[in-house]
Amino acid sequence: MLRRAFRAMGTDVELLLDAEPGERADMALDRAEEEFERLEQVMSRFRDDSELSRLNREGVLENASLDLVRVVELALDARDATGGRFDPTVHDAVVAAGYDRTFDAVASDAPEAATAPTAHCGGRVRIDGTRIVLDPGGHLDLGGIGKGYTVDRVAELLAVLGPCLVNAGGDLAVRGGSWPIGVTDDLTLELSSGGIATSGRDRRRWLRGGEERHHLIDPSTGRPATATPLRVTVVAGSAAAAEVAAKAAFLGADIDLPHVVVTDDGRTILAGGLA
Amino acid sequence: MTDTSHRLYAVVIAVVVFFLSWAAVAAHPWATTSTDPRLAVLAQREQRLRADAKLVQHVVDTRMAAYRQALRARRAQIAAVKAQAAAAQARSLQVAQSSATSSSTSQYSAAPSVRVVNLPPLTITRTS
Image (cartoon, rainbow over all chains, first blue to last red; front, top):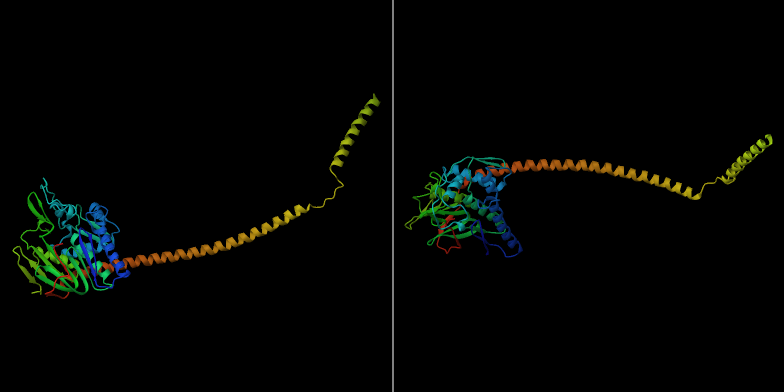
């Protein structure tokens, strides 16, 4: 079993590849690492020179890369499929909540801004070929779905050499083989293809003016979601789809995919055919 | 007076005759008019060079014509390839968008087989 670990997209990435050690495997793992870097340069909202940052800055992007077009398309379809619970236009709400820089740089506590900016959710996004246009004042955050998309892409790359698993901070994709994946301390799921993602408020949270905030915005309020389970883990056909479904389920959507809900009081609920 | 005038005329005529004779002798009218061999060689060389220049110009013209023809053909090929690439890109974009759309909708309903096992995990999922 070959293993490669590194940091990308603000999280720990782990690649597992069931293949013979050698030059080809090393090249594949190198290529996989480069793919993370390449796609981060496309979709990061924390890099001023990324494609997404240019789109957010200018409101329109000509000749967008195919990857950005596909992810935006996926995100818009996800918005439709989840009734708006998943929404890539929550960017301003996420920033208003305090997640305005890489999470490593977000202060654990800071005073509340004197005037919180109005969160803008649900804005239109138009795609015409490789041209993407946002509503005036609209901005996109492709953090979660972008990471899921990247994990799927890298898994496809590595699958050429053998069964593989790609894990980017909890967003997982698997191709071939059987992979036991820990969901809680007492629960392990075995997966041979597809993806797993977990959305919750047990991580990526911080304080603003003494109030706890987290990164999962409820698009209907434009603020971090409340009255939610602690976290939801979903199994789907891909990591990107699992990411979308996990976020929607976290915000209360009924989904027919295998999923695990962990409540605040520590209960673990299996659903969607897992029980 | 008359004698003096005659003598003066005679002197003038003698001087004129002298200079005319001098000029005639200086012109070497008896010398042969045969061509200098070096001039002949130069003339031959000039003719050869002119002939060579014509030949070179002909070769250059022929090659330039062939080059221009090849250039036109190559430009036509490049234009055709560019047109094909643009068409292929448009098609792939269309396919990618449609596949992304179809996959994004199918992914929500189609889940891979998964089961709960009693094995130590190889890795974990957590809030991302």
